[in-house]
Length: 380
Image (cartoon, rainbow, N blue to C red; front, side):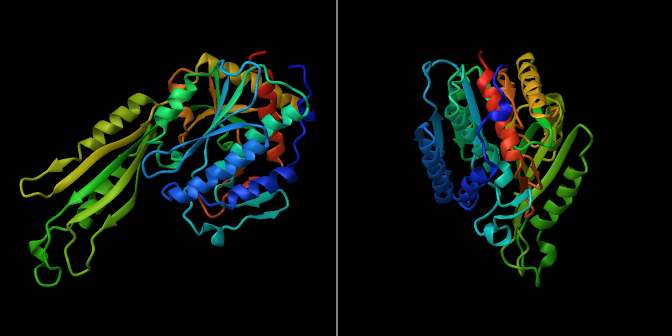
């Protein structure tokens, strides 16, 4: 690498000011109008930075997506695809409990770390290279999606189709620790659980009924107790019953399972599906497999990307570690396709998905320069 990455013109204060607008535009996955507003804001900012932008209608009931391309002499050729999501887990109104605020090098806000911060530094890095007269060897494209936090049920096909057009995939999900990147992801599966009981009057004929809530509680414990070092099970999003004086007929929940290897996830799937049973009287427990993220194991292409970014990190004054991580991202899909994929390139922070989600402000510049340096040398 010949350019001095420490000279990439990124300013933390200016970046934080732009990022604040994104953070204060709440965008929970299931609120389509809110996600659409966030996508429109991102599209507006990308256009102002010089990107050619297209809005793609989202999956049914979910928000739109945005595809951007930075002008390049080799436009249309396979290049670099940056993938990110702009939906968050935080419901509308979270800003009242978790307002955008800063104390020294720490800044809080819903979605600031996962992963609005990473997306913002990625497009800022592209713009910064252009400002200093550096043309990337390969064309750079950006795809921002709307349903990653629920497992990417509607945009997986779009992601895979876009990724197949390119040579390298970069994912600015949060860094899992200060000087790190991600070179693999565990396999993840989701399941819908339904307990079906028998109704009765809870006061006058309690024993005549069979409580779906009680059934769900028992099965929940049994399912989570299957967790071991190789495959985990976590049950949440529970709903059951409607009237306290009625024995509940239906109870529903969702289960998330994560495994380090595909064979472990397959074993876990077999085990949880064994809980499915239907009785002749209509009672029973139903387990339905939902969305799955395949395991992504580091390929030679991914490790070549890591060695490149590690050299860039050294030039910036830090040594990057790498690991396969849980949590899942859309990098699972591109990595499993065999495409050179590097993940965890986003901001440094902590406590994502909580009311303490925050970033280290200084990482806007350090990680932005890391991304910029990588974009400037890939394909050279």
